[in-house]
Image (cartoon, rainbow, N blue to C red; front, side, top):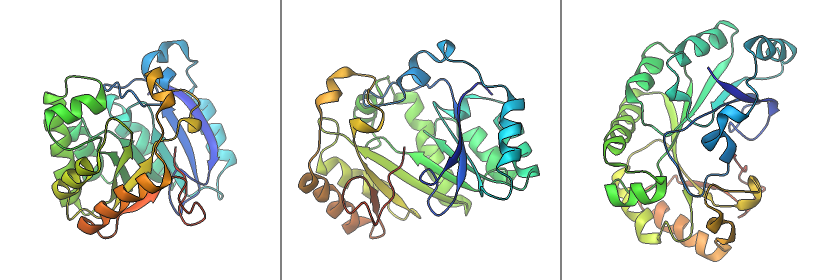
Length: 247
């Protein structure tokens, strides 16, 4: 595990849970709106955090945190992820995984071995090659098939999970979200996240630094999603007292 960042306590990365957060380097997507630029493009330039340090920090948080959120980058690029999750479970900690869904085989292993308690999977766009390539910045045809496998896996698994989409101007239209919701209809939880440059201060493609979505427009996305998936929630600036902002 190539750990590049560690947050000892977070109240916002896992709804209803207090968690530590582990950030791994590297990703197989190049989403132009991604704010974890260094983790994605130049993880080798970031210091690697030793596991002994993480162990020490988790010892300090014993009895305070509920679990650990593993995020990135893309954690499922690491074949030793199950081993890391196993060590967390041995501590009696819950495990949340943030993933883009491109490694359904590893995801299945984690679920089958009960090494993960919650999965937050980013579903970037409607499930067709053109839209997914636009949203991810790569030729997505082969990876999209794996994303579809992960969606089905989660929906059939019985594990707690959410699908989430960051709504980005010029990438997503209201019609896109309507199409996507019809494709994942029946999911346990769907979350729309409002694109906000201020979260990370920078993004992979600088053109998106100027992209903003106003409150009224964001509400249109929420409304169309809730017509298809009634329990759709959101994270962003609307009624922040009712919804936590995520990473």
